[in-house]
Length: 262
Image 1 (cartoon, rainbow, N blue to C red):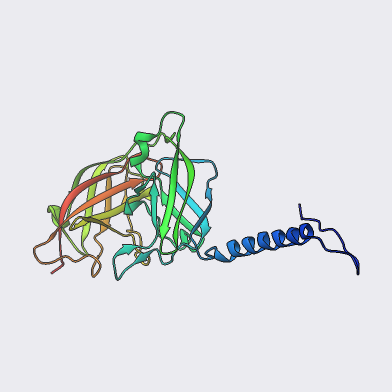
Image 2 (cartoon, rainbow, N blue to C red):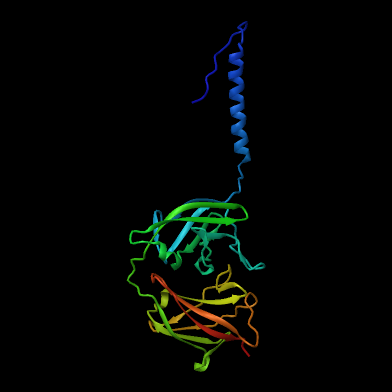
C-alpha cells in the first residue's frame, strides 16, 4: 500500500517527524529505482517448458524463455553457444535439436537423453534444467518420466560400405542391418572423436539430416561429406554410426572406418 502523507496548509508547522517520513519514502523509492536499473535486461531467462509439467525420456522438450544465443552452433570455434544442463550435467551434443523452429532467441529444443534414466523412478522425478550462455545462466525444475512407448529399441548387427566392404566411403552408399528400424522415424547420426571431444554430424545449423530409406531390418543412406568441419584424410578415420528411432528408449551404434572418395 502506498504511503499516505499528512497534508499541510500555508502557515502550518512541519515537524521533524513529518519531514523524516518524507525522507524515508524518498529513500525507499530511490532503492527500488536502483534495483530496477541494475537488472541486466539481456540476462538469459527460462520461463516455461513444453510440454508443461513433464516429458518422457527420449522425447523432445522445448525451453521457452529469453536471450538465448543464435545461431546455436559456432562453426568457427566448433562449440555450442547455449549449454543445457540437467542436474549440472551437460546434455550430449546429439541431444540438441538443430532445426529452423527448434532454436531461437526465445526457444531451445532438446531430446531428453537416456542418461537420466538412472534417476527416474516409476513415478518420475524432478530435475534442475539450466541454460548458460554469454548472457548468464538460468535454471528451473522440470520432471521426467520413463517412456511408456512399446516401440523396442533398435539394434545394429552390421554396417557395410559399397560392394559389401567394411570400409565406408564419403559420397558412397552405406547399408546398416539390424532390427526394430522404422523408415520415416529413424535418424542416422555420425560420431567422431576429436581429441577428448565427441563431434556429432549432423548437428550444426545448416547441416541437413541424413536421408534414410529401408525396412525394419535394413537401412540405406549415402555417407555425407562432413568436411570441412570434420576432416577425413587418406588414412581414414574412425566413425560410429548411430541409429535412433522416435519413441524408442535407447539408440544403437556401431563402429566403422570412413575414407575420402577417390
